[in-house]
Length: 335
Ligand SMILES: [Cu+2]
Image 1: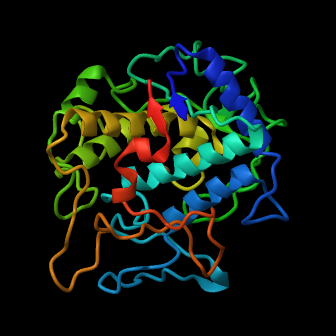
Image 2: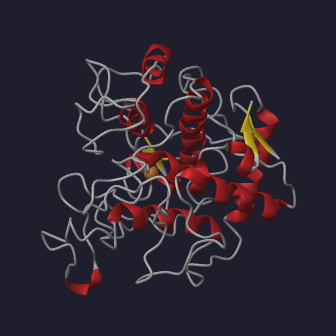
């Protein structure tokens, strides 16, 4: 049983996580064995999700040259680029499975089934000189704007990115992490007030199930497209931008291990909301009107790989949203 604790007050758990991540970065890759590591498999799954390599809905066909010459595939226009995992209801269950599978791998590579992904409560731990940004955890940033990470275990030269691509999936020829901490205006990480307002929303998601800023559902608020007045983005999206650099990449953000601390916190908030509201629907849609196949309904398998370009990223079959709703069945909890 893994217990995910706050990296701000459980330094030991943070050290265990970092040690396991460094081991996973040396473990053999299943998806790209010649060039990358098992850690990078998770980066690759996320890159694929953003490029949406396979269009799974015939009602929303490939348009605008999705398949470019030379095999490079482009994100879909109109906010459809993240259809596997972002800008739609699967955002929460898809990332829950990604983190869960990574956590199982971290445990396996450490020979310790108590290794857990700590969460970064960014409403509390906002000081850039404290956890998670200290030298034995995530490290910090260099001097200046948008610069290489130069301290800690993930500094340039020590933590080498093998899958660093731009938003179109094109390699950017840089093998190191960048962080900026340059927040969108107005500056600052999300506040407790903003989180509480999201947690008070009792509708998981609703048509058109997308990233329209006016769609005031729990999922769209937690993902960050529907946000507080005066912000340009909200919760999850805002934190990606605040860390900046590699974390601001829509494709390769998991190259920065802080991605997993951030998403553990997002996942924790979904769990809090579920536990606080036992009687409501914890995922929607449950069914769709006849003739429609999008978005993913609660018992439909989510997409984690494109058979055209890779094999399955882990042994478990593709999870459905319903299988992600109860942490007890997944073997971890939040403290
Ligand atoms: Cu993501």
